[in-house]
Amino acid sequence: MTSGHEAAPIRIDTTRPHPARVYDWWLGGKDNYPVDEELGRKILAADPAVRRGARANRRFMHRATRAVALAGVRQFLDIGTGIPTEPNLHQVAQGVAPKARVVYADNDPIVLRHAEALLRGTPEGVTDYVHADVRDPDTVLSLAAESLDFGQPVSLSLVALTHYLGDAADGDDVHGLLKRYVEALAPGSHLILSQVTADLNAEAVERAAELFRHSGTPFFPRSIGEFSRFFDGLELLGPGVIPVSGWRPDAEDVTAQAEGIVPVYAGVARKP
Ligand SMILES: C[S@@+](CC[C@H](N)C(=O)[O-])C[C@H]1O[C@@H](n2cnc3c(N)ncnc32)[C@H](O)[C@@H]1O
Image (cartoon, rainbow, N blue to C red):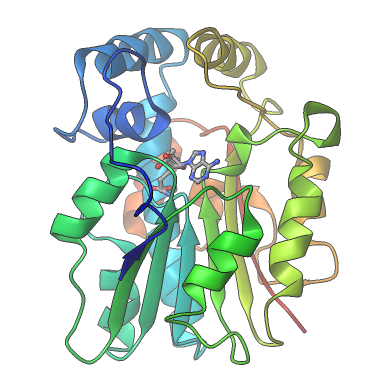
């Protein structure tokens, strides 16, 4: 299934940078254009931790997904998937449980194009893609429900996505939006989140955020209190909300931590 885009032809806008492609450039990918590289370089100059941060964030996604799969969850909804970069979430989840069912969602047409070509899962499991905007939960949830059973636990991940979404005053109401998604989940479901903060390296993060905004992408770093509120009503797994490399670090993260702190918070919680 690749849903949600049938009405409009897929057009990739190469005249302005897109977050998925800038992130791809930081990760060393090839699926970006000169406008993305230009913004990626400017942000890297403003905040030299950004490339390390992208890699650390990606590794957090791997560790958190594995932890939730090992906890017995067999269904995964990943919103704000990004351009495929191995290992992808379905490879981690299906590496633990080959029958795991995974639905990806993103609103960037380039992600759709690559997802169609690259996101192939195990024959026993399911790997699907939904082309939709996170701000439209009814569409995301109803399309995801074609592959996932929302009567059973689902791991919902929004990894490095919420900093593109504003608060109620900005018209997005990101906390209300997250609540809407969590309400749709069965007990035993999990929420995996990470997002940029200006609590750490404030000046560099604000410079980077300003460059994103100037390029036409709204950007909202959040404090630990604002980020932690996403988990209200849920049971945080240890070690709680923490800078991303500190979330159950493996050897590579311990080495990365020695290079300096990454201004991204992370957390994983279970719905009781
Ligand atoms: C920084 S990338 C993160 C990719 C991946 N989750 C990871 O952490 O490696 C952010 C992704 O969110 C997507 N995105 C941004 N705004 C979105 C929206 N309103 N709805 C759906 N996806 C969105 C972008 O297209 C991009 O692929």
